Figure 1 (spheres, rainbow, N blue to C red):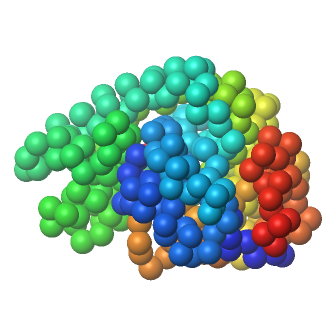
Figure 2 (figure 1 turned 90 degrees about the vertical axis):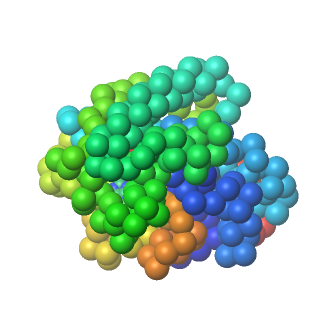
Length: 290
Ligand code: AMP
Ligand code: MN
Ligand code: MN
Ligand code: MN
């Protein structure tokens, strides 16, 4: 088992529900000694250019995105890495996601207004970068700021999660559509945080089987706050499905549990996403850093 504290392939900025601007995120990554970081905002690549400019030759910035999809009624996140941000296919796909997100964010805002939050959508939008994806994460922080919940977790439990007053169901695209868009833009597709879907192991295996059929290449084996048991189960699934193993903190903001490059491990027997041919341009310098 190797510790990888310098490589983090799942992070968020203000281009979606992260608290830091892309520049601030890069500076934080550098202060934590990272050599490689993927920026993977929700359904948005709007922060990549700024992050790459800030990173210059101090940090290898990998263009990515975390795409929202549906599978069997579950909201599943697919991370695309090594994306060509100039790709027309990706642009088209993200435009669709953007429409869905704006519609949903407006609907959530309207529901929050009924709970006494004034101009909720506009207020929330004001706090994100121009063109950013507005997610429930953005609303959660806004709810906390308004003093209506102590933590973002509470905001979800009181208002935002399924079954609560401000929940809005969205028909995200099928996993296959997201994987196709990632491939059309030169990237690789990875199932994000497989342990966080609140599904049985049988369901999880069915999800991975379908993802593999769609041409998906990898899964996140390690993220912050993972138990040794979960890590070892992810390891066995990764081997069984012959996926490339990825890792990332899913950093959104400063807090006690999730931090850039914190608690990321990859078992030695797995194929690493760094060794995928499409990762070559970003990881050819890896040896030099080690
Ligand atoms: P959305 O894609 O709009 O449904 O928002 C999903 C985002 O909300 C996730 O990426 C997390 O950042 C955040 N989130 C989901 N569940 C929780 C929770 N229980 N507490 C805090 N943030 C959460
Ligand atoms: Mn998020
Ligand atoms: Mn996610
Ligand atoms: Mn994420």
